[in-house]
Image (cartoon, rainbow, N blue to C red):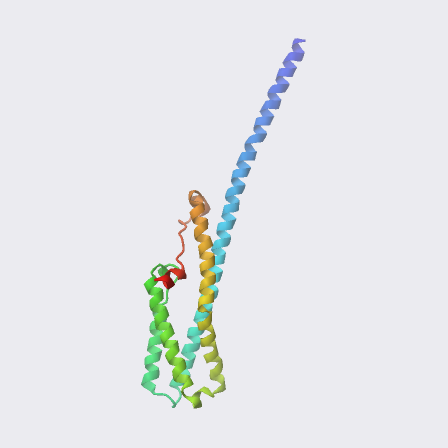
Length: 201
């Protein structure tokens, strides 16, 4: 009888010990899975930000390149005042110098300055070219003119796409403040500025 009681007691102790050991990893696994899921979301948002930014920058680069090529063609032609074309080329160089990036666009005035300088320059170049019927009939120049116009029309579209991703990123950071150090140990994640902020000023 005593042996049976001892056996029963040992059985209960062993069963209880196994049961306790089984519960602990479940909690740890749950905690790890939650952080892992947040990390995946964070990295995906970062990737989306980079992709949308690079698409926008690439389109802007091609627009500036087309402007440069068009001005070079104008400079090599006898149909335009050389000094006027040189002035336009200098202004294009200035536009390229004041370009903003993902960090400097926190300064909304910088975005406004770039947009004003870029838009006014495009307007003047296109007006000057289109006022010269002999020059605009050159077949190889029309694609450059079209590229400039179309890229200029896409600016707001690409900026809106970027803002949409940046807003999601900012909301994510706000909701998960307590996990930020665990999500990115190499740096402190910061909210991204929006183009919408510049347009509202």
